[in-house]
Structure formats: C-alpha cells, structure tokens
Length: 114
Image (cartoon, rainbow, N blue to C red):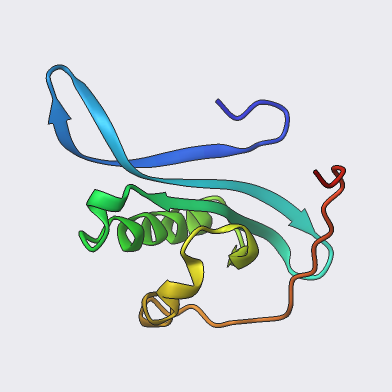
C-alpha cells in the first residue's frame, strides 16, 4: 500500500514453499515531481536474499521499474546508490542495463550517535 508518501514495493517471487510465496528480492520506489526534470521514479531500495543472488532478480526488478516509469509518464528513473545494499558491487549490471552515474549524493544522519 502506498500510503501518503507514495512509497511502494515490488517483489520478485520465484520459489514456493507450501501455499505461500517467498520474496527473493524487493525494490522500493516512489514517483516524485521535480522542477528540474519533471516526474522521476526514484528507486530507494533494492535488496536480494543472499541465496538468490546471481539469479537475475535485481536486473528483472530494474527492468520492471523502467517500464513502470514510462507507464507513469516519468521523464527520468534514478537509483539512490547511497541507500542500496550491495549497490557498488553492481556497477557493471547498472551499466549493462543502460544506467549512467549522474551527480552526487550527500546525506546527513539526524538521529543521535550511540
């Protein structure tokens, strides 16, 4: 459910255990309007279970997100690498799917340090 923030999840389900499916990978995204480029589909999370890595789930979810961005009338789709687990290990994957590194990402943690 999107809720007020518009945040959504899509999963990759490939194996079944009994009557329930187990998500092997998930992609979190939202669509935001921007002044600079118009509507943007932002991929904010992309995670794959360790035992499912190398099976093509990440690429399949990114292809789905690209199709969804076009369907939603987005001009741009972007990946927030700073938030994605194992994102730096997949540079070759992103490039093979036509993604380009663009800009820089700054972040500041607002919760108190432990």
